[in-house]
Length: 356
Image (tube, rainbow, N blue to C red; front, side):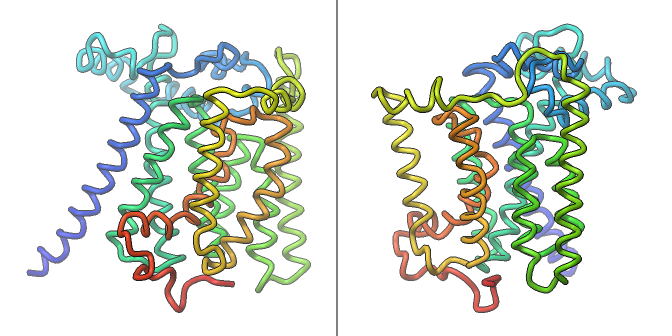
């Protein structure tokens, strides 16, 4: 009886994790079949590994450099490539790419992207449990909807190698901030800094989340240290890759974003539907949701949205993956109401849930 009680949860969790990985892998394969990876010639994986990609893409080093290091130390590199070729046959390009030099590295990137998507789902599960106190089954089911919701974004606009890691880093940071888990937060912060310049948002979120219970001088010192780490790393990248083609920051306010609102077409309908759906999901029972979650979301929007309008394409929502974990967590009660059809019977939060 004891062994059965022990192994049944393990088997269930193993099945769910396998499903998460399989779903994430299916999403990425659908992207490859739809448009392929790295369709932007300025950010081909081979160029990002070599450090010859255009700025600002070359600055996002976490995934390509990790793949390169793994490729240098992996003992069965060639055997792995041959196995994938025999297993997938004419479809091996889905996992190995088409560039002959970095086939193994391409495979590592696909694995990293898959694992980051699946790991984001796992982090969301624990965040839901912490915030709302939902049953374990419900906390495992809801992230599936979150992962499925990513599919249209990635199918339409990408992904680039650093997109799933952006999602994972900010999902992990959000959980760490909600639980005031310092060590986990600093891990997510370091990964986010290596991954993308939008890690600059995290110190400001850290200030709010840890303000209560942390001495003022310590809080100021930790926040300043994070900003210094971000600044030093950014300065190094600008110096090291300063001669690469491109610009340090792409500015799209005048060449795309403002003209976007002077025209009308299918992409405008899609843009309006996405915004309306997000607002509807987020606003449902807004005042009853944990204050810490609402405040982190508002703070992130104040910081990130102006930068998004100026430096990203306004309808390329993959540029807002940093916000996706917060949007998903705020949307959870709406998703449950839609699934159950009886929102009044859905408990929003435990009496002892995080609501500071």
